[in-house]
Image 1 (cartoon, each protein chain N blue to C red):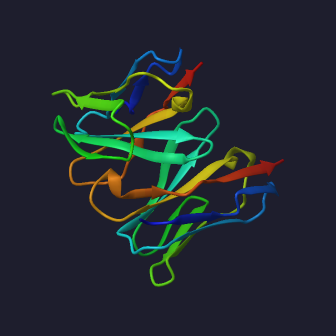
Image 2: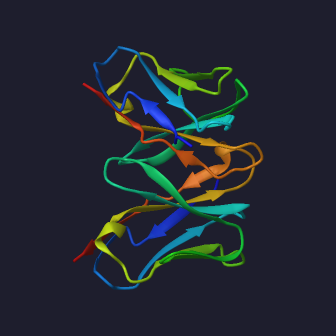
Length: 110
Length: 112
C-alpha cells in the first residue's frame, strides 16, 4: 500500500509570498494529483502529472519520479489561495488505486 | 457543461437509521467514484462504478453500498448508521479513457 506524506500540515504566510507544499510517496505510481479544497468542502483538481512540471497561472507542480516526491508551488500568493491542498498518488487502475495525503492547510494573510 | 451535483448537501440522521446519497456526474462521464472524508482519516476511497457495474470497492463494511443507473447517476446507501459514519461524502466523475476526477460539492452527513 502506498504511503503518502505531505508537509507542512499547516502553513500561514503573508500575501505575495512564494509557497511550497511537498508530497512524498513510498511506491511507484502512474500519476500524482494535486487537489484544492476550500471551506465548505468542494474539491477542485489542480494538476495530474506523471513526470516533469506543469504550470497553470500562478500554480506550478513538479514531480521527481526517482525520488518519489512532488511539490506544489504558488507564486505571488493571495488570500483567495487559502485552502487545503491535498496530493493523491495513483498506482494505476481505477479510483481504488488512489492514496490521499492528509492535506496541507494554507492560510494567506493580507 | 454542468458540474457534478450531489444531493442533499447536508443531512442529520440518528444512529441505526439508513441514508441514501445521490450523485449526478458531468454529462458524458460514465465513471463515478465515491469517497469519505473525515478529520482523522482524510479522504478514503469507497467504491467506483462504470456503466452500472461496481468496478472497485474500498475497505469499508458491507453497510456501505452503492449503485449506478443507466444515465450514470449514482447513489450510495449506508445502513445502520454509526456515529463514526459522520463525514463529508464526495463523489467524482471522469470521462471515458481519462482518469482526471471532477468532484462534486459533497454531502455532509452528521449522525447523532
